[in-house]
Length: 207
Image 1 (cartoon, helix red, strand yellow):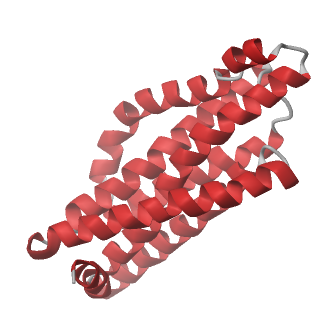
Image 2 (tube, helix red, strand yellow):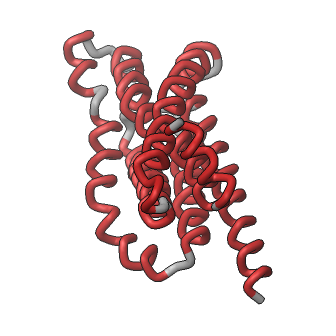
């Protein structure tokens, strides 16, 4: 019944439906960074000749850079997001996610100083996608079925973690360490396009 209420709310309010897709991608994003930034760093450290113990420490550097940026970025983006139309704000956030994740295709060694800006972009993209999804659902969930809507939102996020980490693991091994990031970058771009089209539709109806 609760699941049905959450799905029905998305049928009545397209913004809620978009937020469910955003949750699937944004929560998966976070898991991808946590798993594969560290794995990539460890792999690179071992390839550079470090012992397994040294690699376990040095390999965390890309993850630390991304997460440190993710802690600071909300202070810079919070005010602009609050002043924008909601779907436009989500499109911007997911667009930043697309750039941050897809840019890692240009990284050969994540431990080189040249890779630092790319992991800064990754941190910006990761937290932007998360904030964009959370902002929409927080404002759009109706009071009468708020718990159901938030529940489905979190369920979609859990599915995103489960599916994207599974697929990401295969891509990491079979294609390359950058591949899981590129996948979620493309998904961020798809949600950004969906949000942008929804905002255009709403603007046309209001005109």
